[in-house]
Length: 408
Picture 1 (cartoon, helix red, strand yellow):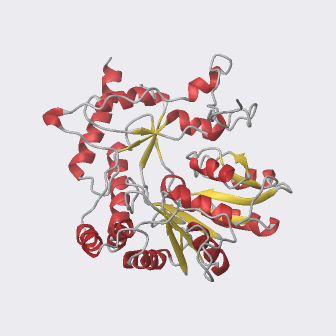
Picture 2 (tube, helix red, strand yellow):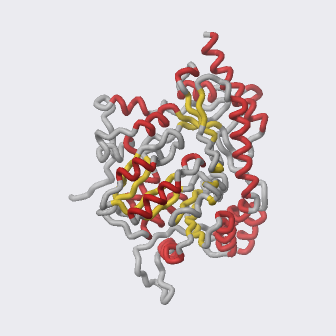
Picture 3 (cartoon, rainbow, N blue to C red):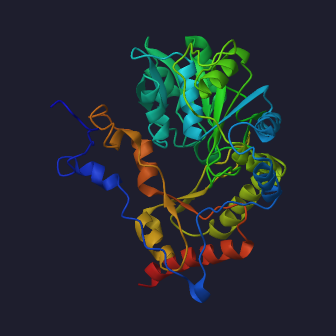
């Protein structure tokens, strides 16, 4: 009997001890602080007309992918980003998959992404039928290093995906110059960068297309959901078509592409449309959180913070720190210290080249900046609804953690 199942990838950590050094410790148990206080890492902020619009969907029975809020949300989001077209879908991952699929990639195609990114950036390339090419980050931006991108372009390269990591814009001018010179597509992965600006241009309006996520912890949320933005009419048309099984406009159940079912529901779009009505407030709240954190923590030894560039507006989807040896605790020890006192945190991404599913493909290759970020990085509670008292509480615990080591 020739029956198989999906094979699970693994790494023998005894043979590759350096990989083990990059893996975060198990997630700490989140307990309660004084007075039962808990601060989550990122909660949705739903303070507008979300309930009203959701009830309209339910009362009208328009709850699937047909209904007035789909077009309202797409148009409102396109206006905020400053593009002609916005195509909603089920997730940020689906947005990236749709975009890559619309480019007509195949097994002879390579797509360049950073080694330091969320795994969906790599998986969607594979799902689109192409091959992943990894490049290290720039230490000053935490994003794709343009010099290394250019060095890795080859005849098989078809696209560059510039990830705006944690809301810090990538070096789009340099990436755009490479893409133009080599006749490549330039895609923005803006899942974490709603409202960011690069040299006067809205993130999401710079490349051939951009992909946003509306997961519950994102600045703009629909619970689950995504959006592709573009000024390319033909590309927008293909993406919109393959999002919905590639139904033909001439006749039903007639398909010229192998499409997908990645449609957003009217209920999700209703939440998203409400969120766009206070888009700027949600963005500014994250920036305000970051400013408060930095003011509180800038004099704590052994902490380094996310990049800030005078030519870009960084939106700080998550407030990020690197825990250096001078702090006196490792990153994981600090996370456990915070969790014991009711503060939830997350580690940075584990780089693509040490993920079990991609390890053999990139065996023997190292990406020092990606590894350094992964080893030391974590982010603190960052919701747009975070209070100043919450930030004070988190920062006091971090200062106490450092002082407890110093006294010990």
